Length: 214
Image (cartoon, rainbow, N blue to C red; front, side, top):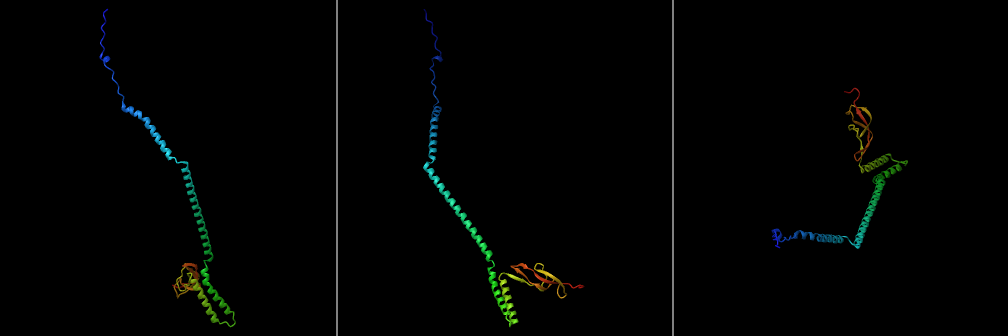
């Protein structure tokens, strides 16, 4: 029996299959990613462990913090005690100032008291000389005025001056044609100033135009 002729293989059947070359770059990257991540994680863990202080270091830090806090507390307590002592000293100084503020004035007035006592003793003598007593009284008055002058006390004696309502107090009005109106013609009681401030106004009599005068 005759053999049937076999059909020739086609070009696609005779060609050897092409080998696919893998993408080495992508496969290499994919194969290296897990290892890199593991290495990064291990490095992060090591650094984290390195940053965490040991219990001994923590104890030392705690002791240092406690010592610093105690030092600050002691400083605060000392500062508060110093302020309290300063306040007490200030109060004591104020109390002394109130008690002895007039010490200088009293010292200046003591000679006046001595002079007055001498004058009274002299006046008690039956053979007292009036002229001597007057002289002693004048001396005593001078001592008193000098003592007041040391403390800036000034007398207000405005006789012959224009009337000043800020320093004078008019007791009465007198018709006068020899002086201008509103002139102090008599001082009933002197006034006094302390450091320029009025302590007591002068009691005065003031002139006015006579009735019927033009």
